[in-house]
Amino acid sequence: MSKQSQSPLAALTEQIGGESAFNYLIMTFSETVLQDLELQVAFKGMDAEVLADHMTNLIKMVFGYSCKSSMVSSSVRGRVVLRNYALFELGLSRSQLRKLQLHFEAAMVDSMVEGDVFEHCKERFTDLCIIFDAEKRGLQQSPDAMSNDPAMIMMARARRVVPKAA
Image (cartoon, rainbow, N blue to C red; front, side, top):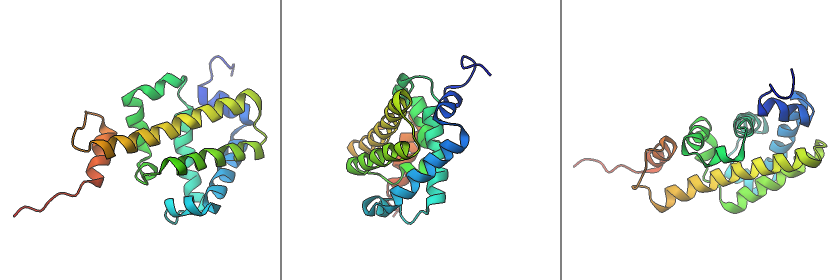
């Protein structure tokens, strides 16, 4: 298959070293995340394999969009959140997101991802962290002023306590 006809995710996976290298990167990332005490608490007892499955789905989805501007679209963000709700409901803080970023970069170094590929992956992971932060802030600032963004509505409903009828 030529590079022109490959999906952005397939091309990036190939540049990383193939599917097994991608899986190694994600497992290394997941294991180091769970060794971090602050993140271990945030991920509420997930084991490395479960976290790796969640992160594989999330990273493949975000890295699969062909351009950075895709992350600006509320419908794209909504799909990302809805399909990966188990991670978004954790409500990770900015410092926890920064730690995730650092662990991802360290896993890329361990996986010998270098140069432009490293920078591209780093940039896309930063996009992912921005989505996490934006979704969390949006809900904290105005839980009742929802747009028609399905992810925002779903997350708000999950967090909202409905008063019992008298």
